[in-house]
Image (cartoon, rainbow, N blue to C red; front, side):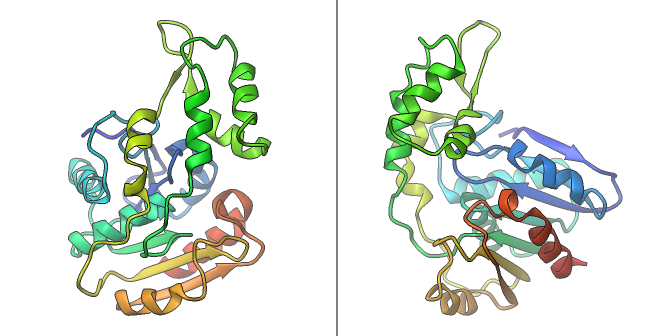
Amino acid sequence: MNLFYRELGEAGKTPIIVLHGLFGQCDNWLTLGKQMTEKFHVFLVDQRNHGQSPHSEEFSYQILADDLKEFIEQHQLVKPIILGHSMGGKTVMQFSANYPEIAKRMIVVDIAPRFYPVHHQTILEGLNAIPISEIKTRGEADKKLAEYIPGLGERSFLLKNIYRPKTGGFAWRMNLPVLTAKIEEVGKALDCNHIIEVPTLFIGGTNSNYIQAFDMSEIDERFASVQIEMIADAGHWVHAEKPKELLEAIYNFVL
């Protein structure tokens, strides 16, 4: 699995790998990634079935963790910091559970290790309702998606997955059929029966419901060396809503 990635900054600095969330892609983190080059050698990675990375029928956190290991080996990264948002955060947790000797530190943004019920049905219904092979403009896609998702910001984020292939028309970058079929995989709990030793920072948004008060005890029990920081007035997309505060939390943890 040769994952698509963007490399920013200078070799020789501490490498940091950033993994996006469900329906996202590495470019969602491009603005923050550029800022992080002041301190890090940055790798923004598209996970399988997302962005410009290959499509596959296989999709689970165990597979995504193995993809991450392969990426680190391919690029000969030594003791990288790994950061993941939402689904990417679960990938990072599973990776550190499976391969505890590889990462220097990990940062998990707005996700807990617990099970989450499927809650993306409306999004998937809307995306699958777009006649991708028939539309002539992005406006047509947005109009159809608006029947399911009223928020312009959320629609704009999702429609970044549409592109114009060389053959003409429009197509999905993400593997929408597999993500639809395997959506229950995204909510699965961390698969680990031992305490994770990698120093870990959990960052949540106070306006998000992904990390709640009852998650704190499980996080403390599962991770030997852990910090939890909740950023005020941030929702689930912490990196878009509070980039300055997020960057400060990252620097305070790793520098």
